[in-house]
Picture (cartoon, helix red, strand yellow):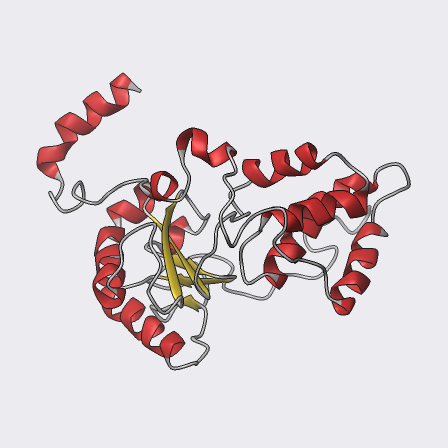
Length: 249
């Protein structure tokens, strides 16, 4: 770690000061980082008495989920069941929902808490309707993800770890989301928006505010993650079975 910081110290003069001016990894601090990440503290909207139960439709889904696991291993369904509870509850997972999952799987509550605090996909605090996760890891940073972050902050009037007053948007800073070839990018709820410029993210936010569904994927005109200059391989349909095989075999 010391060697890493020493390296950044020497790199700093060659990179923009703006790139080092962002509040890297402040999300976990503002939203329960450090020891708070594993500690639950009751709030009026999140305590064991907070009303939660699955809908009739989701009970059907729960049975379908549990059917995928053999007898004696039903507790392995804890992750998809927590995910379903979070989706039903507007994108976050209250303590009472974790307790409900523990009850349905007949497992200790602490084991469910261990799962919910380990995986960052589970949000244990109220968030906005649209959860904006911006990647600022090295590939995105080198593609100027800071300009996207600043555009979001300016457009919404919030900073990392905050939610807009109308409860529409929550902004968090995350590690790699696996779309490095399409950097810079953000994830909003389940959708990826890639190859972004500040004007792109501003348009996406305007569309969401207007109740529209922005088209997910690259904003550069690319279909996926092919080279900007066009394909360099796989330019022809694949050959059929047996291509290149000796006729006497």
